[in-house]
Length: 399
Ligand code: AMP
Image (tube, rainbow, N blue to C red; front, side, top):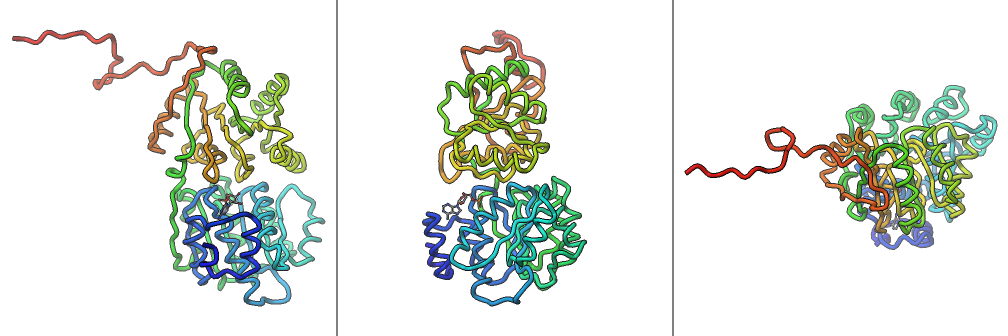
């Protein structure tokens, strides 16, 4: 029960309004520790409820201990603009009875707008590192009185090359702050960031690899991109779904596919790193509102996208790494809903598929679309000896 967590009535009211009935496992574990002022290392993936797990203790602190009249009290650093906007929204909802100001600072927006926002002195800032560092350098914002620092999706902060920026920002922060680091995976690069934690308590809920029981994971063998296009259209036309997310590894492919799907009457949009911020926002909103129901995206653009009702994820190109695959399919099957993830596997992707299966310790279900048979049938079966297996010959026992 949320009431067991000893949260302020105003927070319980907003939690109730959001329809959260029970705290999720990460919230149950992290909230009491964070409220006791501990530094935290939280090993949890998107979909676990990790955002409220760090926001609620921050808000509890803000409303129960009066801070200075001005200055940022809490800073949440995240890898992408979409994630910053999303956390900003969740924070505003959770803080709706608390009279606190929340500011979202990301790249791709006017400096003048952001300076104006900072002049209004939000107590809580949700931000991406690059722009934050620029604002720190020009002296527009100061974190010398910071009480809480959150590094969310630290594995992605690392993968996107933000570690140096993050460390430079941390160097300007109040050393007596509380720090929480959250990450779905803990690659070596994240360990550099872990050093800024002070005797952290560790919270591990089910890791990214284990959390996907509610997602059916299938693969379909494909000859080439043209064959994949046909398979994709077939799925969109025959598989019942509310919202579908299609992943490609290149921007050109995303643009092209979106065009092909629109031509075939699908309500499709695309999202990748080169799409301007305002278009990105409107595309995400259209997807959330159901104006479009197919989104073609790159890994970076989809990161942190929390749109409810994504029930089909298609890996048009297979993810290049296990963690990327986990993040991709993590968009579906959220909050206990059943989801379907389908990967198209061309001959040059078979080994990748096999290594991702080993990494996740799962075997994807093989699926065939009988209307669209291909010539690629998978690698030749290997005998234990490593030689390609031919038809079995019956050996006569020597007597
Ligand atoms: P997150 O892992 O923070 O991205 O959260 C995933 C989704 O779960 C978001 O849509 C949250 O609004 C939602 N959520 C967070 N906590 C709860 C809860 N206790 N009960 C139900 N939904 C929740």
